Image (cartoon, rainbow, N blue to C red; front, side, top):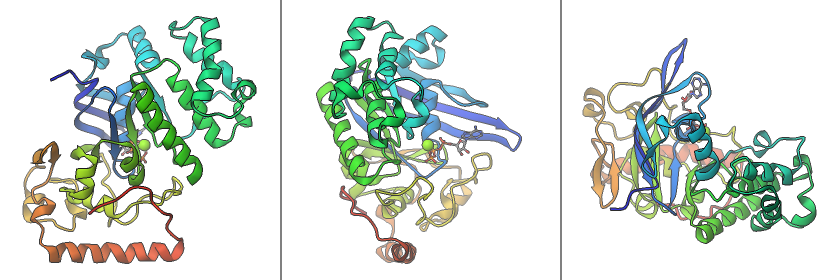
Length: 360
Ligand SMILES: Nc1ncnc2c1ncn2[C@@H]1O[C@H](COP(=O)(O)OP(=O)(O)OP(=O)(O)O)[C@@H](O)[C@H]1O
Ligand SMILES: [Mg+2]
C-alpha cells in the first residue's frame, strides 16, 4: 500500500497545569491520504484543535507532545529542526482557523500578506508572488480581486476574510490543508460558498483536507472519511456514509442525533447528549463515555477502555456494546429522552435546514 501523506501514530499531547496533567490528545492514531478529505468531529474540549496544533507543532504553552510520531511523507514532524518545521508549515501544510481576523495582520494590506506568505518560504520570487496574489484571490472568488487586493482586512467582510485566509493557506500549494471550524463564524449563505470553494480546491488542486468541525452537515458534504473523538481519544473511524448510516459507538450515535444548527454560534455547544465530556485531567476509569452512555453495561465501568476494534469494512469503534447489539426498545427509549431536549430547543429557536443526510 502507498504511504499515506500524513500518518499520526499514538500521539500524546499533555498540558501540565496546577490542576494536574491534562491529557488533551491521548494516544491518537490516524492517517490522511493524498487528496483525501478527512472529517474530525467531537464535542468541545475533546482534543480536535490540539491534535491539529500538535501536527504543526504550534501548541500553546504549557502544551507538549509527550510521545508518538507524526509522519508527513514519512518524515517525523516531532523530530524536525526549527528550519525544517518552518519549511513544513510554509510549503507542505496550511492551517485555516475559525476566526480569520485573529490570523490576519490588521495593519497590512490583504495582498501584501498573501505575497509575504509566499516569499517567506522562498518558493516564489517577489515578482512571481505579486502576479499570483490576484490569481489566488480570484481562485477563492473574491469579487473585483484586482482592486480588493489593496484593501486592509477590516475592509473585507467576514466571509471574504475567510476566503483571503484560504488564499493565503493555498499560496504555497500545500498538500494538506487543516481547517479548524472554518465556517463557524460565518452566516449560512457564506458558509455554503466557503464549503463550495473548499470542495473545488480539493478537486482542482487535489489538496488533502483535514476538516475539524461540529457540523455534521458539513462533514456529509465535504468528507470521505471521518474520525470521531471523545476525551482526547478516537472512539470511531470510517467512511462518512457508512458511519452516518450505521454508527457503532454510542457516542457517535448520540452525536449524530444532536446535530447543531448550521448557523449556530460558537458559544452554543452541542447540548443534546446528557452531561458534559470529562475534565481531561480527571477522566473516568473504564470507557470514558460510560457515565453519559445510554447503553452502558457493567463491563464499561469495570474493565479498562476497550481497544478500537473492526466493526465493518474500514470501520473501527472502541466499545464493548456496539449499537448493532443494542435492543430496539433501548434505542427508542434513548431517542425519546434525547428528543424531549431537542424539542425544548426547537421551542426556543427554529432549526435551520441541514444540507447533508444524517442517518442513525
Ligand atoms: N492552554 C491550555 N492549558 C490547559 N489545558 C488546555 C489548554 N488548551 C487546551 N487545553 C485542554 O485541551 C483539551 C483539548 O482542547 P481542544 O482545544 O483540542 O478541544 P477541541 O476539541 O478543539 O474543542 P472545541 O470544539 O471547543 O474547539 C481541552 O480539554 C482543554 O481543556
Ligand atoms: Mg477546537
